[in-house]
Length: 341
Image 1 (tube, rainbow, N blue to C red):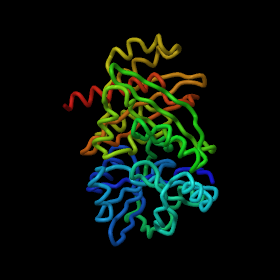
Image 2 (tube, rainbow, N blue to C red):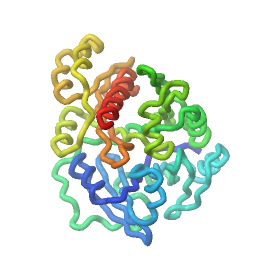
Image 3 (cartoon, rainbow, N blue to C red):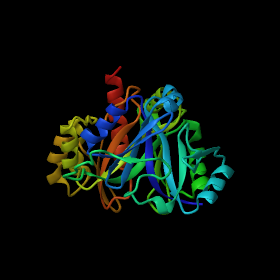
Image 4 (tube, one colour):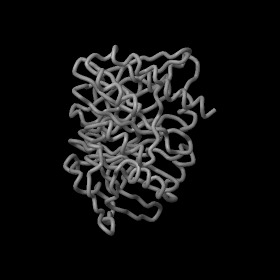
């Protein structure tokens, strides 16, 4: 009754060509297969061990009307699908029947979890159940993109339900609490709990506004998104600076970081004085924990409702999520939100 990995993440969108172009041209994903059904069409994208399914059509309209473009399903591979489905139901998940022959249960908000056998985890084959047709002509990938795998998924939930959701993912899917963080910025504040599978391959960073504080960006996300939803996907890369230059050169927009951040970075993180100039030039954030350091940067949302966005993260031993950078991210998103009015 435990989840082992994320098989794929499914994005619902009103305009698939634009969404696919963002990932393929902007981020280096490869289009590998297509599936056409009576009420929807899907496109499978892959980079490293990360698989994204981009879906559009009448079958997605209800979700899109409520939430806009965003993550609709996070498919888990499980050691025992039936036991995991039963454990999820016992923990309060709704059983939503079958999708392409596999059980589906409710997760956070309107986001669901399709449950697949762990034997299907190999990324060489498309997700099972759909009638996938390989892309024609076959893609000519001359150079693999920078993304290695899906590092974590940030999930924004209502402030009074953070602990409830953390408990749910523990009971339903065998995940464990990994860490927690509380960040106050002015009159606003956010709380977070990280839950992770025993395999280490499924990590959710659950974030929520502090309801006792003034409304801020997470409240705005919940309003624009029509409730809880996936706030961002974090992609692990080996070398973030060339990855950022590659994606920015292909049109991906990232959040800006003030120069004052880099003015104190060399003092805050010893041993990085030589790298600060490159980090400043690319606007990349840095942080250190007991195991090493990490580098990360966050994109602007490419979607009309300004909800889902993306993160690049490079880990040099670090096992955390950039405690100091949680504040930096919050402040960067807040600047972007205020600038947009």
